[in-house]
Image (cartoon, rainbow, N blue to C red; front, side, top):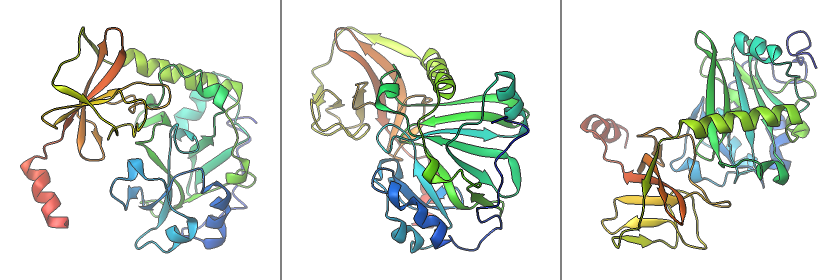
Length: 300
C-alpha cells in the first residue's frame, strides 16, 4: 500500500474524542491479553508503579481502573513480543517513501485529529528475534523539525494503543487495521528493525574488565532483567550496584543512556565486557535529588 496516497481510512474506529474507553472497542483486545502486557494510562502516563515489569491487566480491569483514560502496551521481547514503529510527523512518511517502504498489513494505531502520526505494531517471529544480535532496544531518528521515526522493542517502553491523547483527540484503529490484523513484520520492515538495532549497538559505550571481584555476589533473581535461572547477574555486597548479564533469554534493556532509570530504583551507568564471560550492564541505586524528594512527598 502506498505510504502517501493510500492511507487507511478511519470509518471503523471511534473517530471522536471520548470521555471514557469504549468497552466494545476495548474488548477487541481480549484475545491478546494473555500474551501482551496491557496497562492503565492517563493520557500517556502509566497509573501503576513498577509498570516496566508489569505482566498486564485484563481488559475489564482496565475499563474499571480509576482515572484510566487510555490503554497502553509494553513493548519488547517478553510481552508478546511486541515491536512498535512510531511515525511522528509528515516528514517521516516522505523519509519512508524515499526508502520505497510499503505500508504494512498489520495493527495500526492512529490519531483521530492528526493523520501523520501513527504507530505500526508487529509481533516478530521466533526466527526473526534470533537475528537480533543485541536483544531489546529503542531507537529514534530525526526526519524533520520536531519530527522523527522511533522504534520500540524494550520492556521498559510502553505505547498508548487506545483511548484519550493528552491533546484531547483519541488513539483509534483505522478500518481493517485493528488488533485482529497484528502480524510479523514483513522482510522490508524487519530489515529496518535490524538496521536500527545495529545503529543502537554502535553508539553504546563499552568498558572492559579482566576479572570479577570477590565483592560481587551472584543473585538468584535479577531486579533488572528478571533472570531467575542459570544465575550470572550479580549484586555488589554493598547492595547499591547491579551487574546485569546480556544473555539470549534474559537481558537488560538496550539503548539506555547514562542516568536512565529502571523501575525508578536503578540508574544505568555503562556497559562492561568481562573477559571469558561476556557483556554486562552496570546499574547503581538511584539517589533522588532534593527536588525529586520534595516532589515525591507532595504526591505520596
